[in-house]
Image (cartoon, rainbow, N blue to C red; front, side):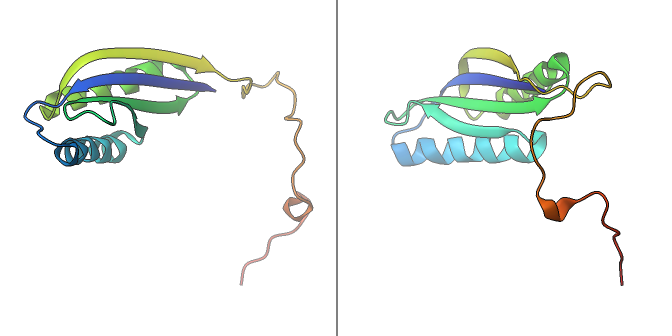
Length: 123
């Protein structure tokens, strides 16, 4: 499993208050979540009127696809013209989970109520 993150540093031109900047950041975050199904959080610049840093994260099984997905999200953010991108930093992380035929079974216990032997009946 690949977890990709990108930190996007923004300059929100024309913002004269924290309230105005937060409105722009909230709009950007909502649009990114809805369109790309990514996690978004303001991770820097919370106390400034015109600067913000957004952390955007996505999960997938292929590093290239995760990176492309995040690049599309950043391009979409840039095309909104709500804030100017001043810097971006992409980081992929690989976790220990892999789903291929040669991999051993996961070493966690399922609850007894999830037994595979139970017959499921529907009414």
